[in-house]
Amino acid sequence: MSKPQIKIPATYLRGGTSKGVFFRLQDLPQAAQQPGPARDALLLRVVGSPDPYGKQTDGMGGATSSTSKVVILSPATQPGHDVDYLFGQVSIDQPFVDWSGNCGNLSAAVGPCAIHMGLIDAARIPHSGVCTVRIWQANIGKTIVAHVPITEGQVQETGDFELDGVTFPAAEVALEFLDPADDSEGDGGGAMFPTGNVVDALEVPGVGQFQATLINAGIPTIFLNARDLGYTGTELQGDINEDKAALARLETIRAWGAVKMGLIRDVAEAATRQHTPKIAWVAPPAAYTASSGKAVQAGDVDLLVRALSMGKLHHAMMGTAAVAIGTAAAVPGTLVHLAAGGGTRNAVPGSVRFGHPSGTLRVGAEAAEVNGQWTVTKALMSRSARILMEGWVRIPTTP
Image (cartoon, rainbow, N blue to C red):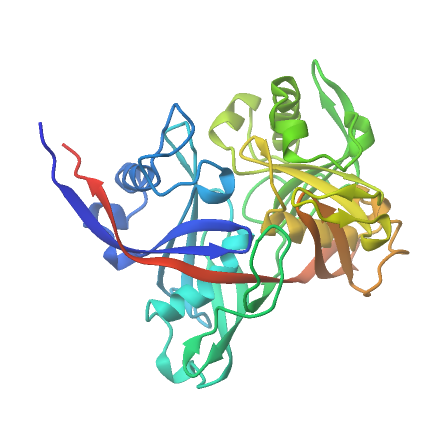
């Protein structure tokens, strides 16, 4: 039976080292304007999932966790904000959309896209200068402030800001993640460290026991020592993603870490919660060759970090995980802080520069201990963003 296609206004953007399909809430079909199966089914079809071939050939997805993403923008529902931002991480080979966390990379594209879509009051956009966009991150209930460059009344997208993991330079978008500790879930009573410890002993049946820093900042993240996993921290995607046994072991560790963080009750639930928590490993500085062929010297970084996203080693670093790295690096005693030399290597106070598979990235955080508990007021980093295509996406109508 022939099915006509429907078309939906959409914009395809790169934000940081990710890409995603952006929609205005009001442009979605009525049934998809509310959370639920109809919305998920539509977005899955847009990106071409689930695809047993793992390619997303019949959709807008790029067959990686960094490029299988969707964003819904709408007028702000929270006082003092300009736009609501809802992020969906779309599984490539399974029929589900994970709404449990944010995408820090695409956060850089939200301000520019909101201006492009007419969601920002024109009176607030300077002729030339910087437009400050206050974003309500609806997945986790947090505020992000984007500083978007404007030239002659339009978002400036080209420039000379270089970001490792992105081939071409572009205009810099500075981001502030306010109060980034994720207090929306878990049994930690809103604490940045849900267990109350900066380092825990994580027992993983059938695998072993590991030292771990479990943190809710930017995105729930499990940090391990690279050496405890048999790694050096210099791994590239090919070293990990072709090793099915290693990926299975890391997923088991992630599942048990999620239980210990109070994010899930049983390890079986981890299969339907791929986006959070993230799992990462850290190591002291060492020289390596990035995936682009760029030489990274030990003196270029304060530490090395590798992280998995949706079950595969990320080609660079998720923006939200970078927030977690910056926050953990600012708290004495965490595995991240220790790998960074206890802050002795930081060339810029209040920030840390880490090495990832595509190169290096600097992230800053303002953390303080209050009444025996660590809190972070903001995390800072710069990204870039660019509209790649605008128009409509087309998908077949449902029966």
